[in-house]
Image (cartoon, rainbow, N blue to C red; front, side, top):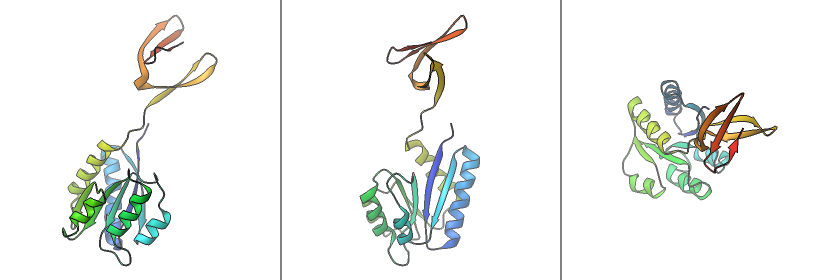
Length: 171
């Protein structure tokens, strides 16, 4: 199973949107995570599209026309506390405000590929991983068995008998 990262990138500068998007795609190729990115040019456009659990990560600029990134992050947090928030900004003066929004990371511009890759690597370590499973025919029905639930597998004639963590046996 492939891990898919749903990433929102929010910045009023198109060049920054493009750069982060390219780096997310490059991270995808280098580390095997599929990244789906959606770009937003304003906080208002982002909040209009935002729903709880819709993104794993949000890269958000602080300086924007209209609503700033801290105000947008506070509004986002009212709907979703679990999404990882990475602020992008040219100044460190908003760092205390950013962390009061439960920011995962604070990246100052200009940033390097290595810095963004480090942030993405750290993010995938804390994001919930999808459980891997197999589907088997057992007792004349298809059963989904999570790999972490298998204690043992024994070959018996033309069958495989699985013992699961809850002591259930499948043949």
